Image (cartoon, rainbow, N blue to C red; front, side):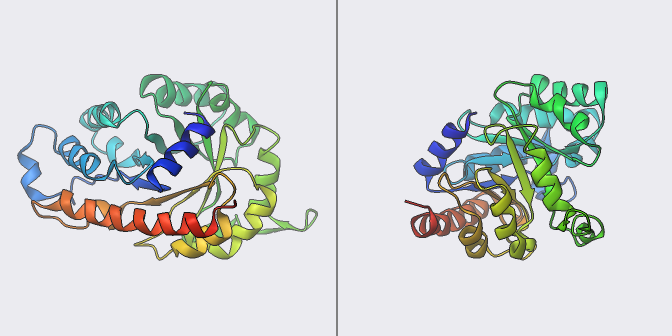
Length: 274
C-alpha cells in the first residue's frame, strides 16, 4: 500500500485508528474455546466489527508465536481475512544483520504479505536495509517507545550531538529511506516529545501506541503530530478488543472503535493542515 492509498483511506473513513490484534488465548471470551481455532474465531469477529472504523490492523506476533504452529496458522488465516484496503502491520520488532534480516523480511513480506513490519534500529543500517528492498512494503522503525524502560537508552543524551539518542536515530535513519517506505514508532505516553520528533521527521507517518489503556491522550497526540497527510496511525488494542469478555464482545469492540473514530473525525477537521 502506498502513502497516497493510506491517506485516501484515512480521508474516506475519517479515521487514523489502528486496531491491535493482540489475541491472548487466556483473555479471549470463554465460549470461543470450543472453536477449532479460537484465536482466528476471535479475530474474525473483531475484524467484522471494527473494519469500518479503522485503517490498519496490527497483530503483535508474540501472541501467535507463543502458540507454536497453531498460532502461525491463526495468524495466516487472520491476514487472509483482513480486507485488502486496510493497512497491515506485523508488530514483530525484528532487528538482526545480513541473511537473518533478509529471512525475517521474507517471512513477513513474502509469506504473510504484511504491508509493514516493526524493526529495531540499534544494530544499524545493515539490520534495517533488507526490509527496505521489498517494493511497496514499509519499515516502521522503533524510535521512541512508550514503555518505562525506554529512558534507559532512548532518552540518553549524546554529548557530541547535543541530542537524545532517539533524535539521532530519527535523523540517521532518514538517510536509508524516504517517507514513502519508512515510518517511526513514537509512544503516546511520550507526547511531550512528539513535537521534537516532528521537527526532525515532518513528513513521515508515525505509529503511535499507548492511547487508551496506557494513558496516552489522543487530542494532544493529534495536535502535536498531525501533518498534511495526517501522518498518524494511532494504535488501540485492549480498550477495543477486550471491551467485553462475554458473547457480545464483538459488539462492545464495535462501540469502542466507533467512539474513537468519531473523535478522530473531529480531530482531523481541527488539526489536519488545509
